Length: 381
Image (cartoon, rainbow, N blue to C red):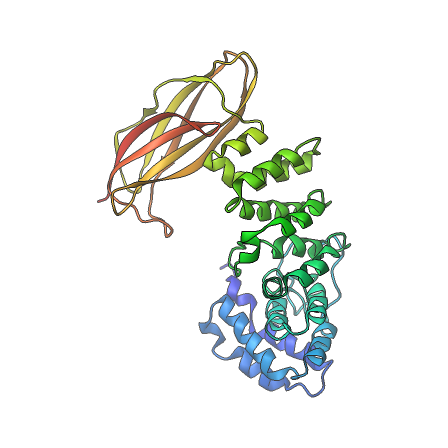
């Protein structure tokens, strides 16, 4: 059986943390730390385990924050090479001297919890910690509480030799980082973040460029026209890696059919002729699939880049419909050229949506514009 992610916070990891801390603080209560950090560990989920280790660190490290930071920094394993870029590798903390990998999470949170009155010292420690794993969550309270000072420090990290440090600049400043605290200051005004992303847009590591794209995607949820403008600007004479990054950054806007974004990416409105949207059936039961097909012809006198999506309008509890857009196909059509497309879509129980019986609608979108539509009924046994 595959190891559960939460089990990376294991008794062995806790014991290894204790041993490495004790090497640099002889007054550290090794046994008490292990007892507190391991209490009822099997019953806890991943973040609960990390928080329990954080609480044990808060109890057993010195009250003097500067002394505690010194112990943390000294207890770390040697940093991986500057091009190391895979935090999905567990890097077990028990594989060699020093702390690394998942054990870094509660240590970084310790800095965030206790270091708000000493930003320079805290950021220096996060700089070390992120090189052994990631500090994208721990840096966020500093960005929220000490915005200008933290941004100034990050501005000095955008050209750092270590991939993790550069990625921390782009990932840590995401306004809507999944599972992380939101940063309303950047939701309101993303310009300081964009200044950092501009310097990272052509980073040599795809790991960093993908983080830049994810940050822009977050920004697009609150400032779609701004991101469309950035896409248009950055695409001028852009190298291939940047083009791919921008396409990934604009994925939500593309799915929404945001016209300025589609135009920036070369998918402006296009004149097409389409057949009727042909459905395989007019009713399906929850758990089954519906097929649909359509023919599309380019009626313009020029070759056109075309992006084809489809939307399912799901029925809500109050009887209204809400659309969710799905990717289908990107292609180039010559003048007068046609293409026939077919697709199936399965509707089944998922945790993120509750389905209701009744009429649903499928739309086909060409460069964000609806070109065909057809209804079907969803039955729930």
